[in-house]
Image (tube, rainbow, N blue to C red; front, side):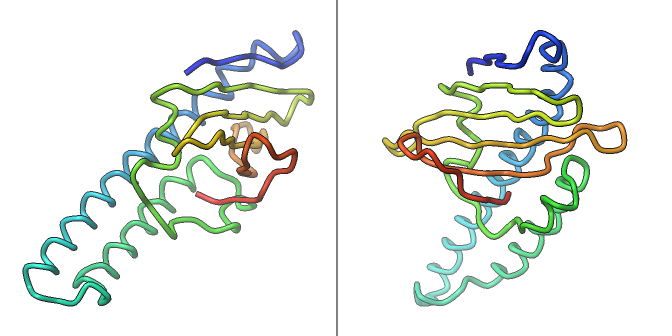
Length: 164
């Protein structure tokens, strides 16, 4: 991961203060997503052994999704504003994880023009496609919290609203 500061000299010293909690959130979210994916694979193996048709949901899958949503909410409540939580979360998990690219080859840009708002853009390649995330972080009650999450493709100029 290459971290680039594109904030003015006035705000550049805040980069670590703003980014460290964000990276901790993304690391924990990725670990949870990986755990759920592995458990889901195990449910599929058990479903096949039991002779359940592939088009049917594996026993325990609904409970796994409920657990994922509950655990993800508990995590996100520590790091996100209500605005971001209201956008939804926990509807999918996969391999590789949504933010797993942070452990590999990616470019992270820290941008800040206002004392109470910063953004972090990540640029990475996944499945051969150049992609990006934009995470808006706001100072809320003395803490830097994720307020908005966007995704897109590098060739696009626009961003699409997203959730965790």
